[in-house]
Image (cartoon, rainbow, N blue to C red; front, side, top):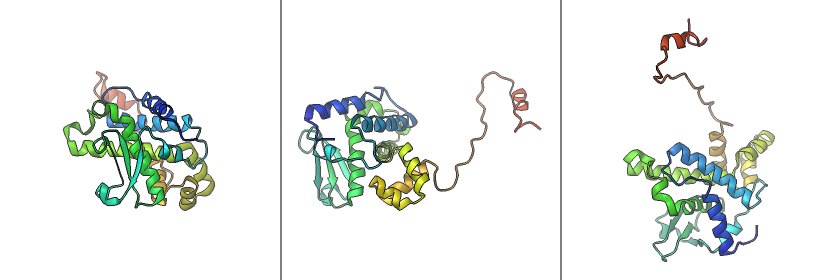
Length: 219
């Protein structure tokens, strides 16, 4: 994709934002909508190959991306704020590897997407615990970045073909650590997740009678 004009970039942001309803979201719904937004973004820019080209995002000027020394970010990977210049901008740690910078740019893009309605969207996160809320917001941004860089279907297709973490990472232009985490979250490597057990919620039904009709629980 070529460098979009400010108007075109604003239209892309508005389109991707429209995926998320403007109401307080639970953590689970926030993660799901982040995945949906990631898919929408790839569709809008026509990204069909494993490695997504992010030059258009880095070069656009609607929300400028600035690469700055590590000390200016307190050794963090990135920051999104309107505090420094009075307009919303992204700041990325120029000292980190390029694969990490790619992840950080998309992580910060999720903050840009949420920015106009962040207080509303994140209101329910953390259940009153500010530290947990901040952690969940960062995890949601990580989920968005991971899904843009490593879409589920493409990851599965390449993993079944290669069965090699480093090769898969190279094909998506991500770090081996990011690819490993993605494969683990998709259940493609690592210990298998335990099978769900049966839980009951009071509904007015006769619970003993219900249990008797479940073969795995009845004697």
